[in-house]
Length: 97
Image 1 (cartoon, helix red, strand yellow):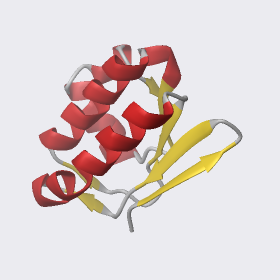
Image 2 (cartoon, one colour):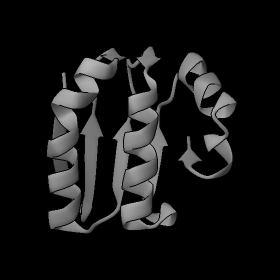
Image 3 (spheres, helix red, strand yellow):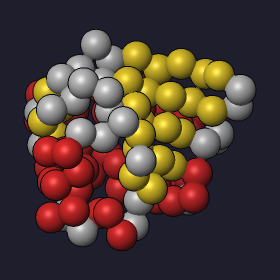
Image 4 (tube, helix red, strand yellow):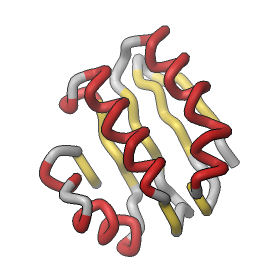
């Protein structure tokens, strides 16, 4: 289930198990709108996410660019999603925990 919460000056987004192209299209505008409004650090909590499409990688890159990469992180990233991020070279540009 997709959810955005604010806690202690940080916006946290949680995602469903599959962040395929359709899911990304469904949630992208909401993420962009919230990031633009709050301008606080953003965490993508990847607990339970087992699949990400390239469109999700674009969301990550655009969010990091909008905030500054030091204000954006991905946490609870599964090994299979870490592998995708590494193959895309994003492990060098994004904070992944």
